[in-house]
View 1: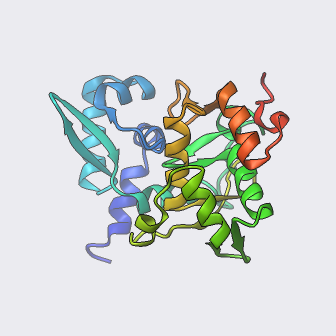
View 2: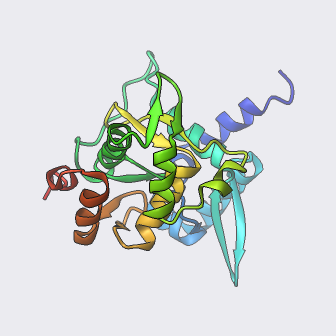
Length: 235
């Protein structure tokens, strides 16, 4: 099919270095070319060439930050698609190596802008159990009591989220835990709140999230998640 974007998209990702750079950007944090070069273990000039290909394919966008240029995934929708792609096991390929359950990236991570991993699954289950969110097999919706909780406890302007084109809530199958976590603009706002309040901090790998001592206390208080579930198995 002449002009198909699928071919350009697939070509852009069909390289280990470019795929590693895209994976680093799925933290939702912007990176410079030099930072991505160090993450991927290549020379800065090599990374610049790879980033040009990703930009041309529409996978990555570049922003000016003073005298620096920072790179991000081109859109939220694309970030969600890339995260979902990693869930797919193709029959002709070996399945990807999964991290140990409850450790590092499978314990708590940012799925672009919302919490995923074991912690994300625990937050999903808690919101359902408390009646703040109701769901069926495919969809989720914020309840009236849930709106009060998210507005009053976490200072989230739910009304502004309703007006956005992006869904406020969506169900994602977590690729490490194999259970559901919450995605959408509301979970994104919740993760921002948790980072701002220092309940969560980022690891050296920007996708990895750490729960602070304050975070363990606050998450247990507000969500009823037991402290044992907030302790990585590596500790």
